[in-house]
Length: 224
View 1 (cartoon, rainbow, N blue to C red):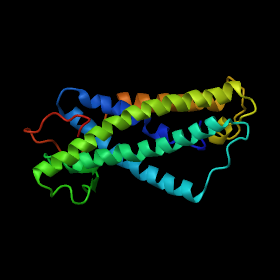
View 2: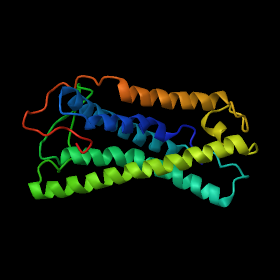
View 3: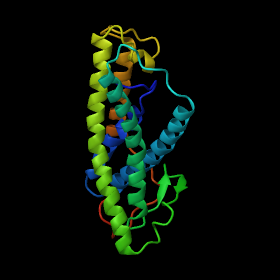
């Protein structure tokens, strides 16, 4: 259900697990996780834009002729949807940070200062609240869309790999994969990679953000 040779959603899977860790009690570690979440989000935004530019300059090969018309349409919708998610998610988060009344800076990985979205930080409080609330709403809706598209993508990829020997869809993402092979090593490597990213996001301590929150600020959450 995809025409990509690398799946853009893999890059962001760990970020959603990382977001859950921001719901813990207020403290230096939770604050560090929040800052790391922002750093990962900006990194994903830059990589996704670069990936989109490369894809526009290098169109993918045509889909297998054996795919039904509805499968082709759904594959394209799913693929475009992932780009919308991988760009829209960090972009709305960036807007939330830039329109926050607390004015916390964003220091990527505690080293590189990252600016606010131009024009937002200087707005009146009411205008900033509108931008922040709108971006927050979209941020949460995009998360829901991610889960739906991920389920479609995985279901489609497994269907083509395990039950459609004449549709080498997985080979487009992992060259050399053999359609119809249940214990395909490349499929197992993809699964192992996803699990490794999720475990890292769940258990690895975040890096030092380079600064501490004000004691008057509320506990950081995924709303930034």
